[in-house]
Length: 184
Length: 351
Image (cartoon, rainbow over all chains, first blue to last red; front, side, top):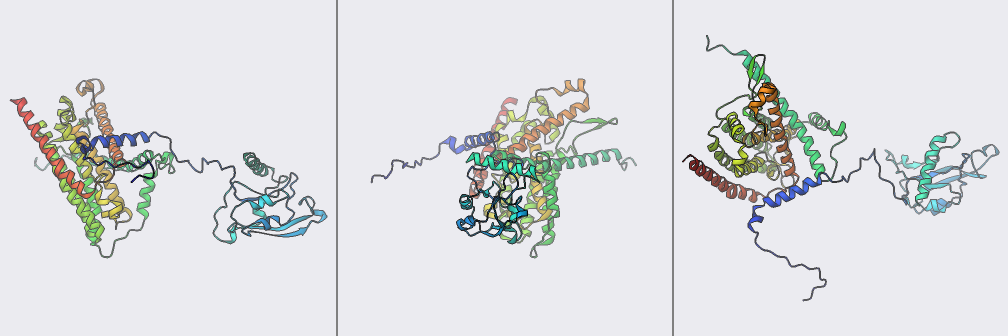
């Protein structure tokens, strides 16, 4: 019968020669291999000190963006919530008062903005849907928590640090964002 | 009254020596566990323990502490006395062999000539055999008193393995003894200092002896008594806390002592290679040379410890019938042939 591929190999079963039956040459060969492996490059990375770079398309925790003056970008249009296939985003809109112009960029803002990280599938559709560049996905994981409630992230957890009051942390977050964008 | 006069300083000297050697072998055994994990990791392209202390050097201490603080469980159906006796016996027999090993030539301390050997008995090697074969009692008693089928199988395996390999070990050494004409380890080392190491004259004897030592220490490829995939850790399955620790530790102490025996018998013991000790004593003094000799012995021991680890992470375990086949059908005839050839050559040379 003709074989389907030409890769089939006939198994040769000869009795072992004397050298093979001694086993010692084979053992020494094996020991040479393991000894050589002692000096090879290690596959392990010393994790907390050394981190593997993220993939350019990595989608991590969400961040709510502010502009340079520290005003929130989000206008609570609800496009992200509509786009979300897991229905993880809920928000409540509110109207900006004149005294709040330094806090919110547009006349309408999100009074409450929550993402349930247990529902979220980190697909990134919210980021794509947003017309105001108000939500983007960072390069961090959602940390573990003891309760389910702890995974519902409100605005305090999501907002980027304020560039006016907390310039340093904002710069770090911004720098990460720019590096991320450049990668893409 | 002279007969009753006890040499207090001799007693003190021996006591200090015993304490020193036991502490030393325990520390070496501790760091052999560390070396084992490191070398295993390197051979598998990993890094090994590096979190506890610099380079993970405190890892053995952390492991020991963990074992001490774990709950100690004695199974209800076990034979309690024997269950406790097992690990103790394993540890004690592991340590006992160190008594006859010459750890160095003698040093001069406070005008006394102190020999770096606890007991220079004239039947040194027979003592080693006697004690080493006692080591299996730890495994047997532990495995039997656990009242568990896996442990019992492991105990039986361990016993039959040690009986099988003890024979080949003894036969391979008889050839060596015919050459040296003495059972005292100190004399054997002294002869090697003059006439060259025994490995040159007895390569086959060394190979057989080394294989048997691996079997006696229950190290891979002969670790059938504790085969984790078929016997679920075998004889120490029911053990927990420091009793388990003692079993594991006894294995490393055994490795250390066996390495010392191999170095003493075949690699010149405390002989410094390529150096004539007698002329070195004149320029450096007795104590320095004795210390250098100890360092030489220790270096040889370290090499054999590495060999133990190296082989463990290279060679897979034997099947039980292969183990018996190797022991009875290969090693014993080989050792007999080696013995006969050595005897013929000795007779030939003596005419």
